Length: 225
Image (tube, rainbow, N blue to C red):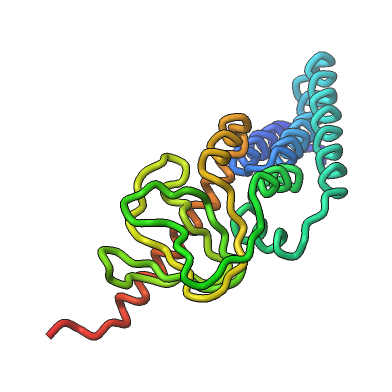
């Protein structure tokens, strides 16, 4: 230990700060800052020999650790139904429990019948839908182009910008749905911009899953004569 250079702890602190920039949840960012401050403390004490820097780093460590702990304590008291837990784990896992609770509360759970049209081609999606149970058919220009099943998000590609949908989505079985009207979702995100990044991540993951499914179906088609 006699030859140990405290500057290495300073480098580790910078790495912790860099890692904190890649997480979405506020509590994780605060914990990353607290860890960075803790790692930098020995450098300030033994390397820089600066009482002012030491006091500042100690204050940063305590402040962000307390805030992170308070956030996790608050989240520990929040409860979700099994349906809500599935929705959160599939699409909103980047949100804290409190943020996910607020977002889910913007919407409604309903039971819908086979044959109901959720989104119409060339029209703006009226809502963001989560298909908890059931199946749906996607049609474009009257042709079947895909299917959706349990766990799918519907309307995530256009609900935020109001663009027209490229296909019609119709339920092909009785279904259990969560939905939030497009206008209500946009208003909620405008008032909570810090949640937008995590929500976009969930949307992007859902779109990637649909693209992968579409590519699989195309690969399974027989070759053209």
